[in-house]
Length: 213
Image 1 (tube, one colour):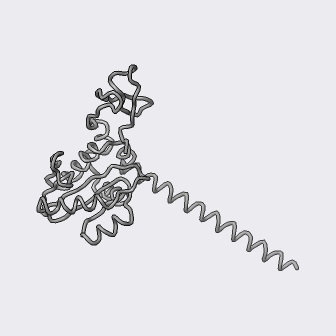
Image 2 (cartoon, helix red, strand yellow):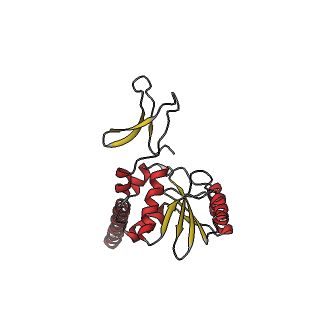
Image 3 (cartoon, rainbow, N blue to C red):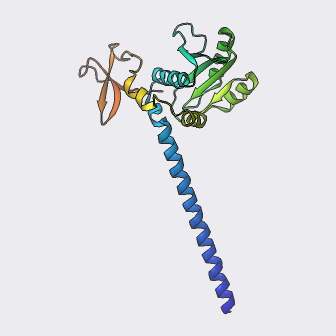
């Protein structure tokens, strides 16, 4: 009887020790993931608008030795950035909310841009993720996808001089008009965060986030 109790106690302690080790391991992984997230500047990218995200990618690839330029806003043929180095690459940049996945239309557009600009490769880069349909189409069209994790890994590898925080602070978002009164929206600050507010405030009280997508 005593042996059975002793075996039970040992077995119980082993289970407790195993669960404790699992908890410590998961905690360390979470802390490591959070540290990598902050080092990459992804939280600042999440606060950018589309124009700021394009400017950040431009600075990132210039540090890698590419001659990067923004595609014309009108008639861009599906590309946001055109990069020239050993290869010519067209990029479509999608600054989305994390829960808003990039659809296959982005793949279709950048694939068309590859032909239009006679590029060697076509990429779609986002701070979010891709739908299953986008992944399937990208594989068929040989379009390279950079989701949130791939973007973070690239940033950490490059360790850019111009950080995401620098671009977020120094590059102004693209101008917008108020959807209510059609006046200009201007940038305001509140609790350390930036947002758009109608220039005719308080007559018009419309406000919106910079990263409205």
